[in-house]
Image (cartoon, rainbow, N blue to C red):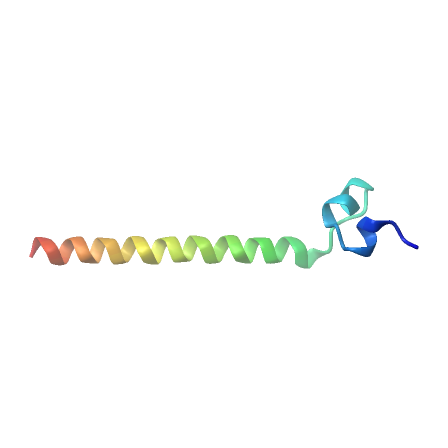
Length: 56
C-alpha cells in the first residue's frame, strides 16, 4: 500500500519529498486569494457609498 500521504493527497507531505505540487494547487489558492481581495474591495466600496449618502 502507498504511504498515507500519497493515498490521501497530503500535498504538503508530497512537497517535503521533493515532488512538486500539482499546478492546480497554487492556482486554486491564488484564485481564492483573488476572490477574497475582490470581496473586500466590494465591501469597502459599499461602505464608502454609504458614508457618502449619510453626509448628503
